[in-house]
Image 1: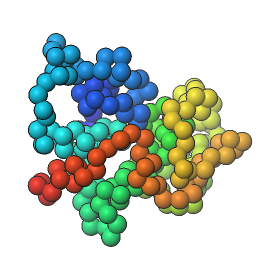
Image 2 (image 1 turned 120 degrees about the vertical axis):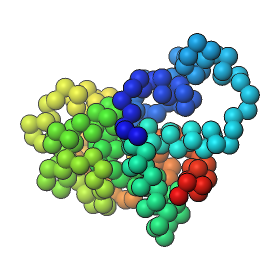
Image 3 (image 1 turned 30 degrees about the vertical axis):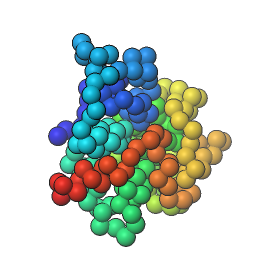
Image 4 (image 1 turned 60 degrees about the vertical axis):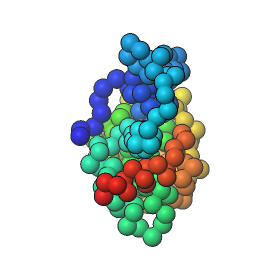
Length: 206
């Protein structure tokens, strides 16, 4: 399955939650599923266990902009680690370079941050990195190339960041440099997610 490029608010309405990494917009203007019978479907019968599990998984996948193959691979890696699988998976997602660029305030969304990375506007420890999935380590510093600091999307995002910067990140307002001060904790994810349901989803598929 390829990365999602369709209507973002529609996707959030389907999942019933705002995903700040996916869009700055909110679903709460029409807080019901999309479609002709959306308002009626919002009051429909109890959802199946499978659907609940799938929706929790999709929240993370769409917010962080991963394909199903990428997300599955990351889950397997988290499962093989010594740390609890849910905590490790969330840590891996938060440590992605495209997410860090977004959380630093350089971009309004993760798709916009991914574009900055792909177009080589981002430096990690002084070196260009154009891989959105690059996994940051404690002590890594993220900054923009000098020529990229005046990009309109960057200036607008820094003036009004989509989210408050996370506890695991330190940001110097003068130099516009973000540093990974510590490993992200599970509560760094900026929306509620039931990780046990995701574990249950993959327990039957791996």
